[in-house]
Length: 544
Image (cartoon, rainbow, N blue to C red; front, side, top):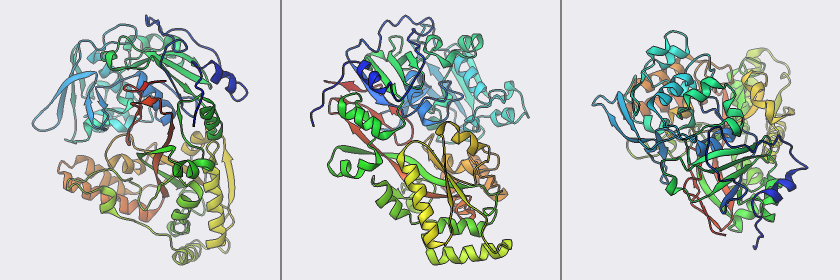
């Protein structure tokens, strides 16, 4: 199909004016002497971010709409390469002690911030301790629990000095772990472990909210931010590997509605986007869509402190009454796999087998069993009629509504239970879910780093990711034991035990494993979409 591509983003912005509004902020970042403007460069890639970032502060951002752009304007010690393997980035090299507990990173001499200042080991020490500082309140603080003293500091049982992250000199960082886990290098590619420019953060607490005050160290630098409309970034000439960056810049639009984004793509206002649910099956069949792996799971949470889901058998009944294959094949229609476990495919065991293949399907669609479990659960609770049930889902992509409606129909047909549906604005959905205000709610998990523990640690007691009020001492101990286990075979055995336990208790139930269906114009090359991680534009190019 021939498309007329728009020059820059002016036409795209005009088309969006009726849908979104924002505050103009086109000033250069503070102290940044990059003079490229993303509207005037020759190669400006236009992508859809889906929504306004919640934050571009690395230690606060912890969702894809923030982390995707953040991954391109910031960089950690390590970065995932095109083969999705961590390699040296801001760190030129690293050493590991014989016991696997001490990592020493040597930063590049030419690693600089977008304002020209050198990136120092102190910037990393400051950022990582800030991540676990209880005053920061980072939702990602738990990711650092491999670091000696980090959990204790976050929980108020130790001081900042007890966190074993130390700048030995301007370009040398030492990190001591509490157990020798091989996934540590994968872990620190996550944006939560990006450095921050210490002086900027201490001088201006709102530094991350506008392009004019933003200081980064990634392949691109933030040069414009029209809130709720678009982000603009240009190639960062201070970046240590600027020669590898082919694009002059990138514009990230903020369109929640997939049909609007697709229309803009068809008219030339987007170089790449996600196909809308209505058209996905047709576009996939036509060969216009590329399918990429993605380590993530779409699922539903139960609030286990609210009737009727305080009862395990009733939770199991609601899970087993759902035909996941029908949802994948008839509702979503984007070639996803039904999920029989929580951990997605793509995580190799020490034997080389896939974790999901070894774990198998941990629960099945079984209407008769679901009906029996519901009867037994209601008897245990003394219910003659089941308390009202409301399914909550967020606004935005149409599949959320379609899935909720499918669940409503399946419960009516399979359990003879009428449930209510509630749509919640996406801007407040997470806050309500974290506040334990929704009885049964949709959710999703995209892996933060390449290890099954990342999925399973979400449901330990008091985890910020739990959001079900479920607590189980045996489960907590299995996760704790796995994190302390140096033998990889035994560690994976513990993880399988934990997954089997949580899917028997059923504080949530998985529906399907994600993939990444992508529409992309033939002029675009070099975008790397990691199964675990975020979109990389560092190696992207445009040949229009």
